[in-house]
Amino acid sequence: MVDAGLTRTSARDAAYRYVREEIIHGHLLPGAGLSENELASLLGTSRQPVREALLLIAQEGLVEVRPQSGTYVASIDPDRVRDAQFIREAIEVTSLASVESLSVGAERGLRDIIAAQRAAADRDEFYPLDERFHRALLGLAGHSNAWAAISSAKGHLDRARYVGMSATRGVQEYVDDHEGVVDALARGDSLRACELLRQHLRLVFVDLEEVERRQPELFRSSHSRAGRSPRR
Image (cartoon, rainbow, N blue to C red; front, side, top):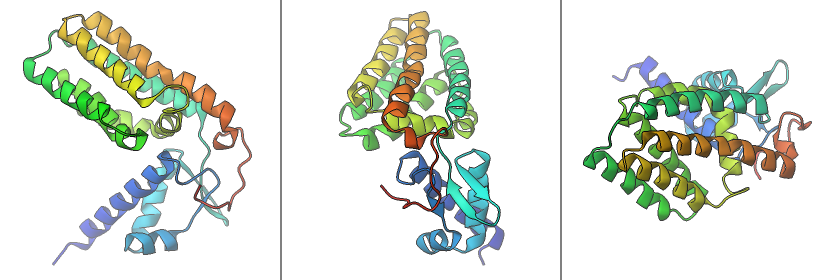
């Protein structure tokens, strides 16, 4: 017999991943109402794990639970973006700085990811490969588990990165950045690799400014109307 607690936890995790990814990828827009009943029906589960998932997402500031009203997708918060960027840069650059040399196997692994990124047709294909690359960089210094700390802080950052990925630069320009970091590591120039990584991570601020100019309705300063259609 399947343990009921385990089943509910698995259902909660599935609901969490689904709703979070829909928000980050811009399929659920600020102000969109989230129905526990509809989500439960869509995911083939009960309301309880969906409710638990929405509470977890609310802790990240990606949704707002309004008493006597409902649960709505929150606007992108530029302050949370900046805070998450600070955390991410501190962890990733510090980790990379401790890498003294790049083994043949590690370099091959990174270049394989870059090759897959080169073949990506759009940001939907590129985004998971981008995450994979940055996790791999952390792994060079044995800090792969630190990705969990980054992920828990960067919901708003992920949204800004995703919508901004094609705002100011093409996807392949981000791949060029990755290749530059690996080239520097392969030369044994960790100082240059760290500087290139820092520059790459800070591009989110350029993207953020441009996206906020083009789509102010996505951001906290905009007065999103609750109850609008959740789909673009």
